Length: 269
Image 1 (tube, helix red, strand yellow):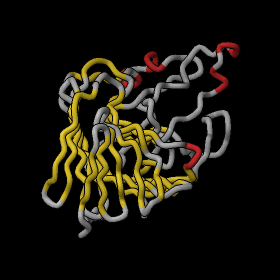
Image 2 (cartoon, rainbow, N blue to C red; image 1 turned 30 degrees about the vertical axis):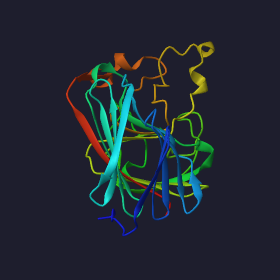
Image 3 (tube, rainbow, N blue to C red; image 1 turned 45 degrees about the horizontal axis):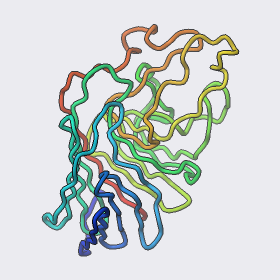
């Protein structure tokens, strides 16, 4: 209901390495050699989302890009090895739809797609998901689905005391408006049971080897800082590693089954 195409024409500019697509106030620049978004502008103002989308948690090297006009849209197909694939559909007026699929296999910390955005430009987020607290693979209880207006903070759980934490994994993700010093970034999911990785918490300093802590309280996160995942990391305690905490605390096991997702992006108001 939120995603509505406009009447603006879709225009493209292309050279050897860049593909620039614009409609209405929105302009997005792709690197044809990597498949990555280089920059986004709305009404002449830049939104610093970049370095995505990328698959994360497993290997999926970029192979090629194909693009052409679709039905009242412009379609950019991205092909990767290991049968991974993604399609950006730029709709009239500026909404962008992303469909992706992949088939991870093996024991993995996490699996999905990721983007980058400068954390020092983030002021908060309005989140429609389970909250208000973040979760881990083995710590999914205690949160409630709802709409949460979260102000940015840099809380390290158990070490600093501004709760609920802003950064981390969120389950049952439906939508988020990331509020920034530039323009807001809105992302809506049309896929159930996705996790949102909303920036990465700083490592807890009390986990230093000098303290004698034997466990694991700093689990791995994707290399980007805005990610959409089908599996997330478990967490241990100060005294035990995650895998010692029982079956729910083990890493994700993927069997090569195809996974997919659909997201909608809006840059600016």
